[in-house]
Image 1: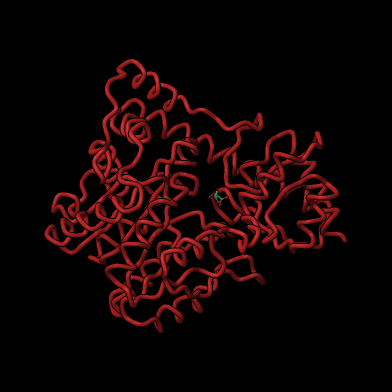
Image 2: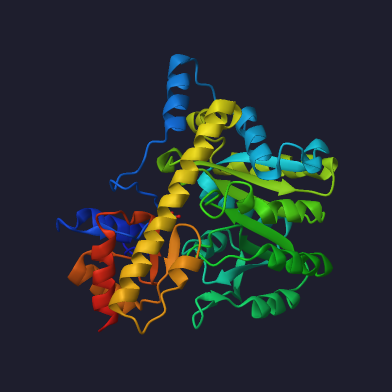
Length: 398
Ligand code: LMR
């Protein structure tokens, strides 16, 4: 039956992370996968999550299937988080939200939904983008293209080229955009740049599809959803998938959501129905515990507040690590510009290391970054940052 199968080539992120786990070297450092580690090098258990778990454990009850669209308290909590407590769009009932299996699940449900209801549309991804975006949309049979994004010469954004490309997209094209903390480059659009794109989305009749996996890791919980609120205010129809994996440090619980902002409540109801149909044909309904956990944090004011300040601490620690890495690298290689470490936002920096340099960093120094040159700066800590800087300087010096 399966004699003809090709061996799996592996995933550029997850397989590398597996290699890291198997690496017997004592001093190995994992800056490959997008996971926030604390200064002890551990995945933190947030106080807000611990308290929510205790609350859930104190009221263990029957465990029925959730509805196809997920837990109601989760869905309303997510809506408030993304669109704001006073959102007119929410009051008008024009947002359809479902709980998904992480935001990867949200991307896939969104991709399947588009395959059924906008079958001729092409998906445009930033160049570069998260390594798995293309695979998810192609697995749903979608045609995938790219638009210019990262400027290797400056470590910044090719905004004019990006806008010009969007201006050429056929009507009903889907434009996948990172809401904040772009993965893999850490290069984001400014509010002015979002505002410049909005009339283009409208004039060209394009469908933005936002991916929000790092809310709170950029400038703040509300600041990081600037694009969401701006698109709503401009009456753009759009899709957004969001994740709590990193922001609540609950990776394996698979907590995510998919929302579609529609022109009116009638369309939102039909969209919700078709999202449910898509979920039913995929995995029937999402996990109960994930829904309860996130809903408890979002809907308990004290926990919501605690979460916000814990996230602020994570954000500040990442900034500090960026500064320390920048300082040592600049001292070691004064001829080079490492400012990108300070300007790029969120968990990732695009280091400009080639695949061959990333291989050397891993093989000779035990420091794992992706072969694309992406480094997860959230894996740095006060004990390893200087060693990483020294190792990078050595590899860069040739
Ligand atoms: C990453 O980009 O490293 C994370 O989002 C983990 C993943 O699933 O790729």
